Image 1 (cartoon, helix red, strand yellow):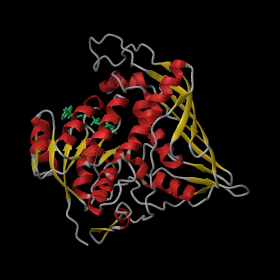
Image 2 (cartoon, helix red, strand yellow):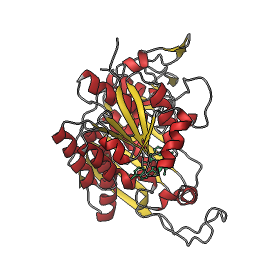
Image 3 (tube, protein in one colour):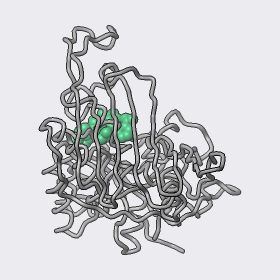
Image 4 (spheres, protein in one colour):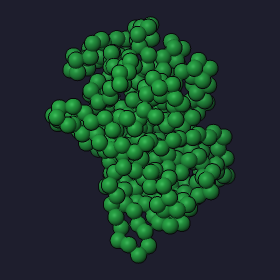
Length: 394
Ligand SMILES: NC(=O)c1ccc[n+]([C@@H]2O[C@H](COP(=O)([O-])OP(=O)(O)OC[C@H]3O[C@@H](n4cnc5c(N)ncnc54)[C@H](O)[C@@H]3O)[C@@H](O)[C@H]2O)c1
């Protein structure tokens, strides 16, 4: 089968761009990574040279290039709204890293703009399309745990300490719920569907005295804005209830938790920040069983030579899934703008519920189709076996 590849430009050449550029240029037959762009041209030129990408461009050049069909936005969240709007107005389809934007109204506007212009808009995290979460989704959809009754997720970090190294965490969107909780909310929603009501309590981050002198010379103490520890209860449209705990004010020894309960069994889901953390099925009167993956893209390097950014896994599946929707003319049924908007509304709803002491009723809804099973994603005799990518086509 031959398919006209989707000419794609990556915008933003920072830390996460290495794995995207590597994967988009080599892993998916539907993508032609034609250009990389950055606010400073030198950054783009360096990445283009490093990965053998034909063109380094400015954003203006990418917007004006009629060949570029799809823009992959890897800029910091504070730049997302401007970059996405710019590309949509230039007639490009867009896939953006999380968070969608830093303001729900802006995200609503962008979803409406994409719809008005007949363009596809996709939103990370695409870890939810990885082997772990898709296997969990398949087990739920095929009735292995019966009807879902409830779920709980939790994650902890010392976010203020981390913000010494990652400076962008000191600004809006730097709290644990937005920086990391989004992977948990994204996966929870991918498994259980839309949330209708939220109640919550929360605490801000402490004022942080910098500890690493060589990184923070002369820096005054700072405080990450927003609620950095949140405990929330969610009611899902499917009838299930959920419990969420994000604690960014404790130590960095991560104790991640993700459990889905049903009328017939329980699923222990792996770390949703990874593509292939194990899924364990617990049925009464049986020992817990770690399930084989029913889907591909488990995050392991498929390309042979190890690279320093391998731990970022299969980032880029969401871009390929969007590109297949485009080429097949099918609905963009997974990481849609509606999904991104709902994830953002749930996180923001937790803040609002905690601040007002009242239940927050969500306005947005989304639908997400599970991927068709297809788990071969290995090299065979020098060529990539296509089952995993085939699962992204329909
Ligand atoms: N670093 C991670 O571990 C990680 C993981 C997953 C997702 N993300 C997300 O990916 C995005 C990028 O993260 P990062 O860690 O690579 O950030 P980064 O700060 O390392 O890189 C951002 C890049 O975007 C460029 N840039 C900034 N504004 C721009 C603009 N207006 N136009 C064009 N280029 C612009 C900067 O020059 C820089 O090269 C963020 O949304 C982040 O949340 C990061």
